[in-house]
Amino acid sequence: MKIQPNCTLVMIGDSITEWGREQPIREDTLESLGSGYVHFAGCLIGAAYPELHLHILNMGVGGNTVRDLAARWQRHVVAFRPDWLSIMIGINDVWRRFDPGIPDGQQISLEEFTGTLETLIQTTRPQLKGLVLMTPYYVEPDRSDPMRAMMDRYGEAVRQLAVKYEAEAADTQAAMDRALQEYSPAELAGDRVHVNAVGHMILARAFLKAVDFSW
Image 1 (cartoon, rainbow, N blue to C red):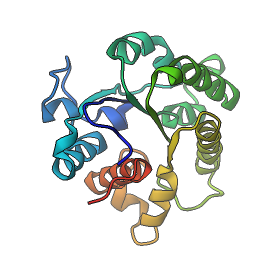
Image 2 (spheres, one colour):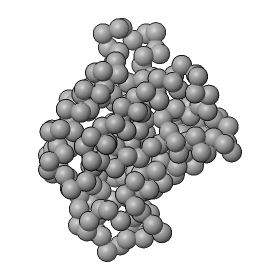
Image 3 (cartoon, rainbow, N blue to C red):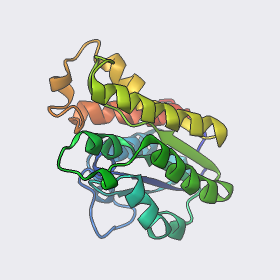
Image 4 (tube, rainbow, N blue to C red):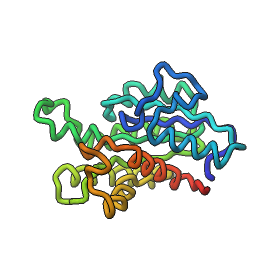
C-alpha cells in the first residue's frame, strides 16, 4: 500500500466524511472515525495492515463547502501536521446552487470551487508524503440530470487537480455509477447524496483503491 508506516492520515470533508464521528476528537478510537467510509477504510487498513500503525483523523463537518474548508484549514489540517491527507468536498457546493433559498452571493461557482481548492492544495502539498483527492458524487445514473451534470463538472475539476499536483484520485462518481448498474438510486441514498452503509463501503473502496490497498 502507498501509505507508509506510522503516518498520520487526516481525512477532511463534509457530512459524508463526518458521518457520526465523535466531537471533540478522542484520538485513536474507532468512535472518533464515525460510522461511514472513514470508519470502514480505517478498519480494513487496520485488519489488513496492522504493522502500519496508522494514526487516522476524521475531520469532516456536516454542511461544509470549500469555503468552510478554507476557514478551518489551519485548525483541522495544518495543526495536525499530516503525512497523508484525503480531501472530499464539492457536494454541498453543487447542491446549494440548486437551492432557491440560497442568495446568489452564497453560491459557489465552479471557478471559485476550483481556485479555493487549488490554493489549499498548493499551501499544503509540499509538506505531505501523499494526497488523495476524492471527487464529489451524485447518486443518479442519468447524466443529463442538471445536478448530476454539474456534479460531473466539479468532479472533473478535482481529477484535473489530482493530475496537476501528483495526487491519488479516488473517483467516487465512477464507483457509484458501477453500483447503479445493479441498484436503484433509492437503494443507496434516498436523497441521492446521503448514502447508506453499502454506499459508504463503496466510497471506502474507492479511497482504498486509490492508495493501492489489497486484501
